[in-house]
Image (cartoon, rainbow, N blue to C red; front, side, top):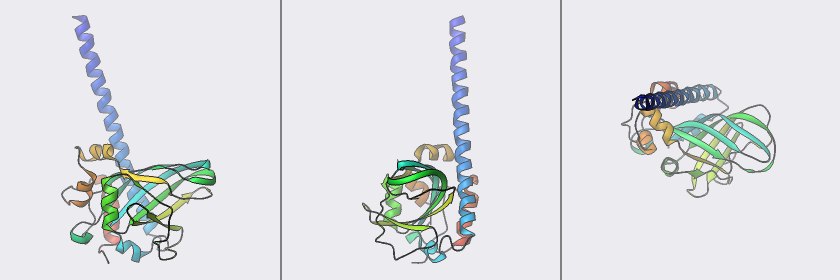
Length: 234
């Protein structure tokens, strides 16, 4: 009887600990969404940071707040953020529910130092959006698709596999030689999506179907975009 009681108590304790851990992770995910909104608003409130004409042409926006990059000869990056897309046919509608995203990987080159950097990525076409939402996409270093400089502290990057133009903007805190996302990968964070939305739902359904409601933690992120760039321009 004592063994049975001890087993039941252990099972109950493990269950409570698991629930607590899941609640803690969900809280971190919600904070991440709030940080995405704050970072995007701060960046878009400075006109020179992200050109309005490019923002108006973007199909989707990805925000990675406080990406950690630390390197000595070999660069590395790690970040968690969110991606939201315009709804409707040809991405012509308002901004929809965000899918949680992960940034991982690194680049090679002479790099010294470490810092936390905020990144905003503009996904400029539907092929790029669908590719990123479907699988892991590697960011290339080829900037040939960019029509010259695209703004202060901006770099144009093209995914060589999908040939999908992605424009990346960074806001650095601290010093770093050679800020770049080249060699990193971007993918949906499915575990975080399950915690945020309470069920397993594909990233593409979240971002493109218009059937998933915007969570409270993402209200600033979505409202900022709806105010700053309410209409898509081809």
